[in-house]
Length: 104
Ligand code: FES
Image (tube, rainbow, N blue to C red; front, side):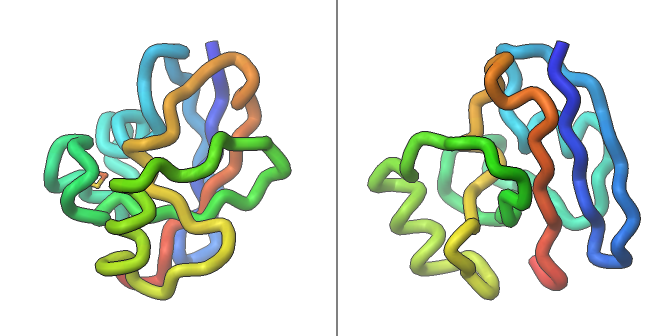
């Protein structure tokens, strides 16, 4: 079991347990995290799952399609921007903290 914490735009923190075969968008939508829609169902074509990775976990770099979506559609991209649907959970990401953007 993996624990993920979401920081909402009002600053509140919400932590959830997740299975290691899920991705971060699935955890967010299953738990009704405000600000993460996941409109395309995780096919890397909407960017409504944009998050900022706030913990020091080492993630693999974005694939080309994620990079294109972040560059073209993600609101207020920052150096720690990622698409939650592209963050596949493994035990190494236990304790991951992501922040939801002000606007999505
Ligand atoms: S859910 Fe659409 S890009 Fe992540």
